[in-house]
Amino acid sequence: MRKFIWAAGALGLAAAFTATPVKACTTVVVGKKATTDGSTLVARNEDIGAWSKHFYVHQATSNGPTTYVSEDNGFKTSLPKTALRYTSTPDGEQVNGQWIFGESGINSENVAMSATESGTTNKKGLKADNLVKNGISEASMLDVILPYIHSAKEGVQRLGQIVEKQGSAENNGVSFSDKNEIWYMEIGSGHTWAAVRVPDNKYAVIPNQMVIGKLNLKDSKNYMASTNLVKKVKAWSQNKKIKLAGYVKGTVNYSKAFGTNDKTDAIYNRPRMWDGQRILTPSKKQSITKKSYTLFLKPDKKVSPAKVGQVLSSHFTGTKYSSYGKWKGGYRPINVPTDVESHILQIRNNVPKEYAAIQWLAMASPANSVYLPFYTNISDTPSQYKVDGDYQDPTNTKSAYWTYKTTAMVVEAYKHKKFIDSSTGKKTDLIYKDVNPTKKAVTKQLKANLAQSDKVAKTLSGDKLTAYLTEQNQKNADYAQKKWQTMNNSLIVHSNKLAPVTKSKLTFNK
Image (cartoon, rainbow, N blue to C red; front, side, top):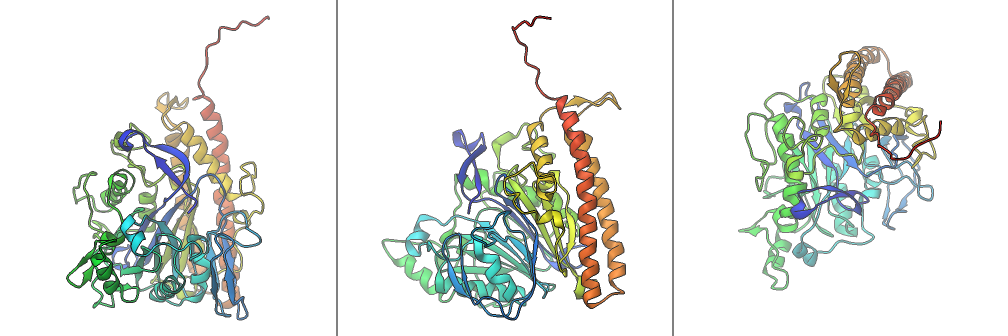
């Protein structure tokens, strides 16, 4: 996908950005018995760079197009005529009239999908089953899967059938959820895939590295895989020209067969698993240099959407590895300047299904943004989340994306600098002076708004309910953006205090 890598200096210890498009993003999934209210939670940071994202709702149809052709790579597939309503967060500009990179959404059956967590296939895996240039890719995945599925498991099955038949252009991880369960799926080669059901009482933090290990395909309630995967991997392992790893006594370790675990992963990927597990299970003491981490863990305390947001906002926060501090080790953090949106897809079990689905959406870097709780049973999305022509136009003040991106850009530019707070006389920085207080206040109000609108929603149904939920989304979007714009003005004033003053030998006439 068109993402940006953290290029490494000597042995990868001095990380910095380059414009090389490669893998990015971080995924968090939490089972319903591990959450505070019995919800399923699927979340991810999307990392690109500095072009905008939108938030759209696509309405249901019984007479939709029956053929899809991707404007990204030419992938072509047939579609059912009947499509469900679904939300998405596509790139801020269409390609020949087509929205691409839809990334995340929830459909009218309360099935959520997050796509994708980019990965890398090892050389032997590519020899065995190379990727397909015009196969399904991240750019088209959400739009050809989410409108046509009625459960998380069905999402895995539909995507798996396409991969087997038409091939995949990329190594990707994809999350599906409904009110009952979560499935995490990995596409490791051109035509193979594997999926595992997330245990209800556990969570996972997943970087750009394949993580699905040993498959127990006799347990169909918890594992799925492409047709004849074990036979194929066995044959490839015995092929002298390939010698694929991962096959042992009638079973397959999918990540060993197709994934990587090398020096790049030690800097770029595994530390993110360490950081997420440090936050959610602090009782488990681990080293950031471990060569592998347990995929599914129990949290020390039940997990809320806010806690997931804390994980996705982390830059090794509060540790010596923090990229906002000395950044010891130069490890790639979860929250990075190239985040363009962060989503938490929540399917609740403690409210009626008509308003159980919430798409929490934070534009730009979540550390410097705020998650807005958007209902998905809606007729439209907030106007500032679908501003036309704002793809790379930071001057567009109507755009929600550029409002929150402005915050991130100013904070990142001065994140290591402090100034004297005139109100206290003490040293502070932009994050503690401006961002954190605003974020705390807005988050508190949005939580209260959600509780209140849930109460009103109980009294409504049908079109009246949809209209009300649509209206509440717009009100919350207006409220949060106005607060952020006010804060951005303060940021600019305070950042002026941090601007370097250059001594000059030039003299000027009075």
